View 1 (cartoon, each protein chain N blue to C red):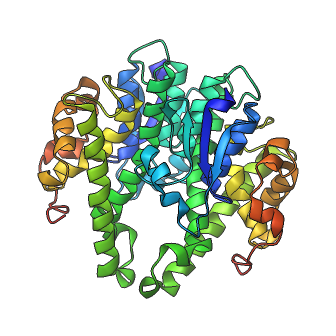
View 2: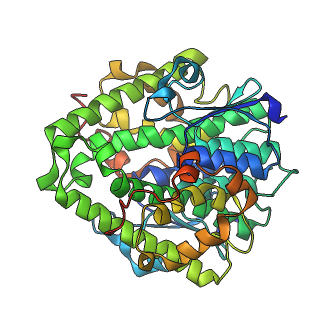
Length: 226
Length: 226
């Protein structure tokens, strides 16, 4: 099964990391993969474009079936391999609802993190504004507070959508991992930091840890002054 | 079933419209709902905040189960009511993969549409830049071409993910509907316009059509010069 899967990925990309965690959780180790360097624009290669006109990563194929977009690949894998590995989407409606909600709330955390941490990547030099970056920072702080509140309400040791590891964690952990890496002050999200400590050694997460993060465990201090 | 559901919504909001289309397709007409005026900031009311700390719409409740975020609510409804109404997520892996992929590709179309059509809503007066808006327009034109190409490849009369109406259409139609409404030149996406004509009279879509669009069939010509 895993042998006829192919994942094109880049190191540290949260969307790629999600799919890798999902593959590990669904016991699909052994999937074929090709690591591409963003810095060298390798993700724009013809091999990726042939499968993904957006020339983005992750680009994923299972046999003849192409599933691009990280959430799509994750949901596809959970559905296709529902009965093996970890159940990532619970059957119980109340539990399922929360998993889905937190999965999609992740978009907010991701967007707001990018808008601060990668401001200069997304905004060309002549268009950068102190006022915009300030507003983005305030928005991120509020977003972190919201997630921290979610974890506080559910109690110590809790995952993002309850007592078990679910698709919410698959989808959101790769984003959350950026906060300690980029030196975000702990007081902005103490419970998210505890959650990070709890999950970082989970086998699926360890197995898919970004290679360049292993080489350099300390990241740039982009969020130090958040 | 529908009687124990409550949807807080705003007219014309694509995320709200998605959930309403899904409710109609799953034969859940009769759901309770509260229309809130976006202009008057009614979505920030205490009643919504009690269920959704983000104070956003759609905010949705099924009995005691809260499911915010439009895609979460849509997936929840399809799962909870899988055997009734329209099957929105096919079982066949190949078909399912494309439905998921197009669902999540919708984020691109939505974001790029907002970045042009609602530029002045999202960007404070002192920060608006001709260069940014120009870049946003180019991005949107390219995105429309991509979707038009998808429909061209699948042939006339096709839905977004194949021969049948699926969750991809539920999720994306509310965004696509903005293009004719805001006077987007037909040549940027002729097949999307045909798709719009094909779907606009679908019962679930007619039943959930934005109120002020009925009152004023012609929208502002925001995209006239795209």
